[in-house]
Length: 236
Figure 1: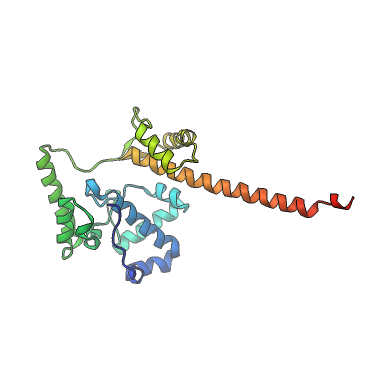
Figure 2: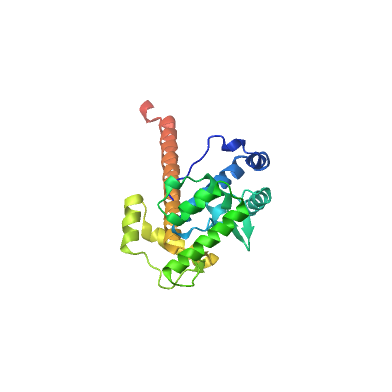
């Protein structure tokens, strides 16, 4: 799902106000960052799960990992998210989505009924829709992708190269990929969608490239200014 409805008065929600009081903009930003990721992965999985773990969220938002864990526990405690066996979900999100935002019939059914359903009812409805989808496909496998270690056969294919060169033309994606793979292997990361994980890594790499370029530019400018101010050759 490419976008979702965000009410302009969302900041007045009592639970979100508590997050703001305790954690300020960091907590508020973390909440909406998680909601964006859940919506982004809704189709075709229909899980309402947050794929990223606290370490990844902390890395992307530049917040301490322990603080992210603390904030996520607090938001689960408030009922902004649900947690089961280490998996974070936001089932109530369905009631805030418009059925005109998707063409997926299963998701449309969930959205339509969720307007008057509770979180537990949404979970039950989601399970029913998953079973129906499995029956239509004629298999008994789970419809939910599970996180796994990076497969040995993983490689950056032509479609990925086309995407990164068009999206981030100034990025040395080969060097960025090597550094990303080093990080993945060193930290033992697991993802359900490794192509999407790589794309996220390239996005962050380009952000760092841009930040470093700006720092170098500013440093060079300051050096030139200093040289101009201290130049006394005109006096000779």
